[in-house]
Image (cartoon, rainbow, N blue to C red; front, side):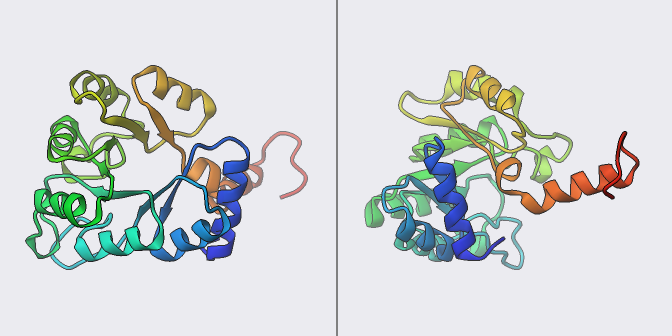
Length: 214
């Protein structure tokens, strides 16, 4: 499923059926979708792990430049307060994005404080992507329902609020918009064909009523 042409086909299908844009991981996938869907709104990121840091979503300047060069319209990056690889400073990275690339940024955050800080530093979008995935929020589980309202109230005018993480149905997406989000990112519920098939297979092998196919 991670083949660039498969990703590009899924992106095109999503866009043709009403998606406002696509969020893509890795320069390879961003480039494939840009070539196939030249007018698409692309939020790009690159997941890379580095020793000594838990930050892996577009963690540093090299990754930011690569994502932007591949054709992203918005670059998503971890905007939590955690130590970045090489002790790179979030504020300095954002400044360089503005001054050297003029690249709009989506801040992937885990809580209110980090979301407001990212907006103050200059991120155009703030997303709840890392809620439940950091040490500080390990006891929480997405979607970040309780985070949407305070972020909506306190984010500066003009900063977009994105609900991402754990959205598994159209009803939940609607709830996110009603809760203050400007847009919703849906991942596994749409693109996770492998996980969805596994779930069906487990249910059927467990003896679902009328099952004769397992």
